[in-house]
Image 1 (tube, rainbow, N blue to C red):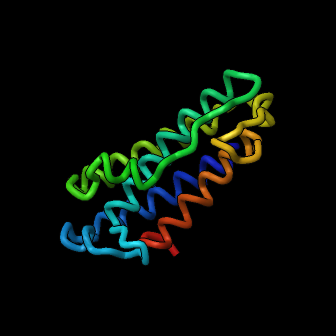
Image 2: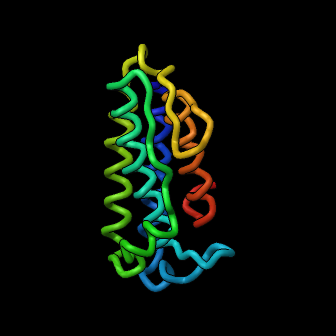
Length: 148
């Protein structure tokens, strides 16, 4: 898990630099076909960090995990992320992910096969959740031009 953690730190460092170069005005412009702005995508990634933090730690403490699904549109709407300051969002996202990298490094090897069910999805292992977290993050960073 150390390699995954190191890659997460590398991605965050690179993306943070890129994200901080985007003007506040640009962050509110729609960048996705569904109309989401950079702020809304980054808010979604903060939610992802928060949800996965809970999943990682709870799965490491239990023999299996049942966790509710994530209602992304509702979360973004209720939090009014588009009204938040861009540098606040970037800092929160980057720092949370650096902390998640620390958590991932310290996940017990003996718990990586713990089965986790998110909503009505098929169960996956804790290891899969951690690896998929980085893939999901990269997907959305590419969408907003923060990584290649």
